[in-house]
Image 1 (tube, rainbow, N blue to C red):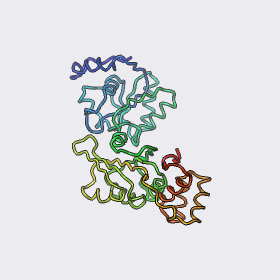
Image 2: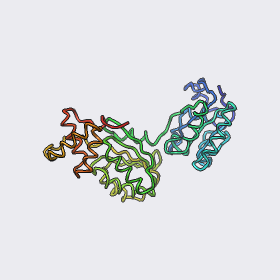
Image 3: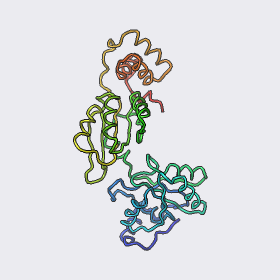
Image 4: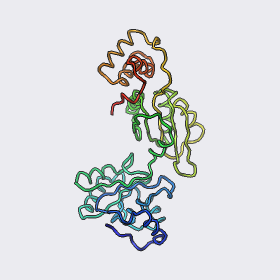
Length: 317
């Protein structure tokens, strides 16, 4: 097990915390430690993360210029290794070489949890494939932070990450999202946020709830609750700033509209599709062919099956 270095301006102040938390008594075997770091508020770092960063033989960082100030704040002076999107394959080999020598390597991104829509997944996969131990050091995550305040309906949550940049790929992504009744989480860069809002408003049910968040844990943190249809108007209030997290709620669960709105032929076709496909997919196919709202078709199908409506139940894993 690694020992806490005696140096560093904050070492003496931290001793009671190490002792009370018991972190200093935990095992610290060789391996790759995937360490979550603050999103913007340095106070969000965990004691275990500080312990690992202080005792690691090396820290692989997405941007050493971003990580260095955080380490300096807590009196941590460990060797830094750049592991960003443009050199990740090379960085993975350097990390593997260190792991082969029995070292403990910490992996961090600029903010939040590494390898989730951030560099790091390739390094993690390489270490795991080579048989080295990979240990998560959980902590800040923009995805879980927003989900915790979103107040979603219970059910499946789909993680999309950053949507693609290509036009046709984006259209396919929104079509897939429209066909899924469960909730979804996506990230977006400020320079594409307006475009994304307009595309979502056109592709999804405009009444679907959405939570829009930016600058999480920072001075200008903003969390807005609105609808998909109102997203463009919300973004028009101020210039886009910082990366965004969007949580799109599941399809509304109000009372189904009367089944008589669907003609008999469409209903028979819908039921036939449902015999071969999950209900959500059957409704999506029928909606594309008939022009009727997918939500209406899904609710009618659930009502025809004589069960309580649960859009998440038929989600494809």
